[in-house]
Length: 89
Image (tube, rainbow, N blue to C red; front, side, top):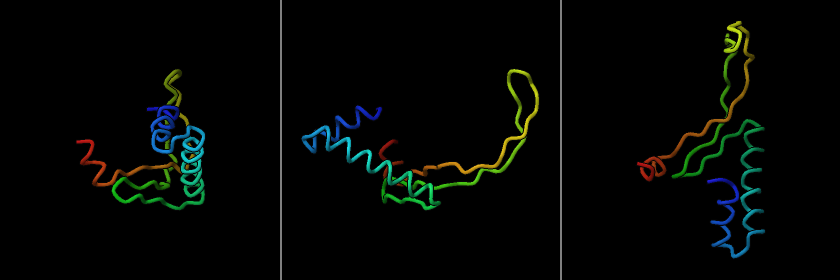
């Protein structure tokens, strides 16, 4: 499902594509903003979005085989909740 399909699903409940798109954009901006500050977002039953630090490491350029140093960085991580795990299985 892409964003347009999600907007269409939410619009069925809200009776407006414009309102559905605004709601989805607001949620995504809220999640991104919290992660940018280093906070985590827990949605009980669905899962948790959090920021994790990835250490610097040595990598390899697949085209040339040359080794290179990859810098440390923050990455977004999602851990599914129990209800979501059960719904998928």
